[in-house]
Amino acid sequence: MQVNIASLRQSGKLRTSETYRATLNSFMKFMDGKDVLLSNMDAELMMGYETYLKEQGASMNTVSFYMRILRATYNRAVDKGVIRQRFPFKHVYTGVEKTVKRAISFKVIRQLKEMDLSHSQSMEFARDMFMFSFYARGMAFIDLAYLTKENIQGEYIIYRRHKTGQELSIKLEICLKTIIDRYSHNSNGTFLFPVLSESTQNYDSALRLHNIHLKKISGFMGLPKPLTSYVARH
Image (tube, rainbow, N blue to C red; front, side, top):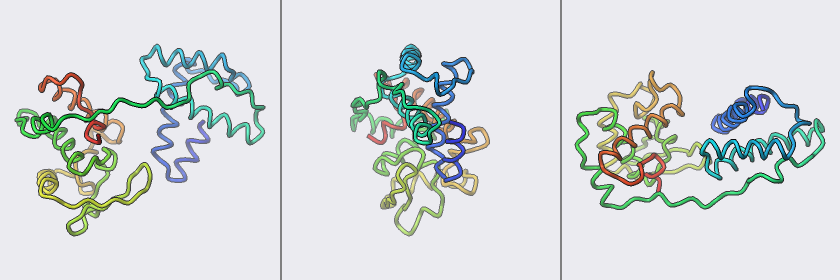
């Protein structure tokens, strides 16, 4: 796993390397920090890990996510002749369940937009980033966080998706310009928005903080389910 993580980072696949790191951390917690020989990775062990994840409250898609990464790593070792294929993942879940749509109503969007959050700069900023993502036809939070002034070209925002590398362009409407102007003076000079700062030096902690603030806002609004960065995409 460590070799795969290093290889992914060297090839510039930072987000993928982070998913491998998260998987390794999760599995090592299950193993109480002890290494396991590839020859000891059998179906019983992986079924135990699946049970552990469920007891931790993980969804089936999260279980599948970790299992597929571990399986890919195991299969690479098989391909290299390091270990004989013993199919340790044959009894654990590696599928993808259809997720419940997280879309919210126009009424909620309007209520969120018009909320007075001047008492909390952090919550006001979280609301504005949510609205920016919504206005930008569901821009992923990671793409929003890494936007720079160079991404603004004339009357368009042009950027590449971190996840796929696909280039997208969005007309720079007034609603987007207003939010950009509101925070351009607070950015660190590199990025368009102050999402990544000294207190949140990496993307994962920034996303976690963003969702914490959105959850607080959801409480003020009395929503049955909390807002998240992903809700804006829907």
